[in-house]
Image (tube, rainbow, N blue to C red):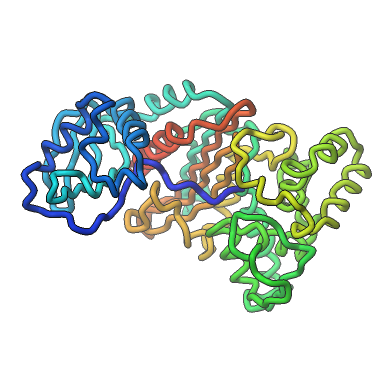
Length: 410
């Protein structure tokens, strides 16, 4: 449900004016100090402006991720674009700048890369994570219409997938357009009663503002805009949408209904969970009647970091199902807008399509990937759910990155 969080190992970057290439402290020496010094000393190697944005505690946390993942730091080799950090079990790209006071003013780390990695090694690490995990990596041969399992871990277990459910709305919408019922150029006016909450942009736009259907769908997929999503949800209709979703989504709801039940009206959520089909519909209708602007505590939603009913009210879909639906959208331009920058670089793939989803306790990534126009397609879907605490997104991101690199090497 939240906007996809920037992966931590690519987020540590801050450009500070006044850096100097002629500083006495060499980059190699700086890397050695950062990775080898006592934790209490880390802060002394960074410029004050840098630390005002990224504190020493965060640097220590990121340093630990790399050492835990790749082993002991060994050296930094100069490259055309920066430096290649060498560890016992792998390497990572990095960029660094040092100011005239011999303080690090800019620092960036790329994703950890294992010197020798295997799917079995990744599976072993995945099994150590707290929570329920489902992974599915499939190869699709379009010429033979054949599908092959490459890597799976509980692929048929239906887990909450957050906003990844929006792939099904896009599929239903594309089918409707292909049947001539709608057009991408159709103009849709935003309706107050269909407004949802962040993530996205349109929750701030006034009712009556006009947008093409293609713009709404593009926002729904690329930035997970919930208001755009709910407009598409209502335009298609819940009865029609039910035919697209797997049986594991016996309960189907829009984003506004879910967010209201989980985070604003817990008594209604309990009522919903105990109700029969008619009672559940009545509760959802009541949620639809409440406008976000009528909720006094709306800002509270942005401060929630603990799981809320992630095993009770969610879109429960297996990673195999998510692989299948994103593969069915392989010709869609919209899934290619945002490939999950930070984990996937568009230039590394001929096609890189993506939709993910998250809320406290839930994280999903689902990709469609093709290396060349003649290559088979790959679909990779990764879900982790923890009903007790926030998922370990740093560890999960690292393992997802390893799966992507193994896929690229196939």
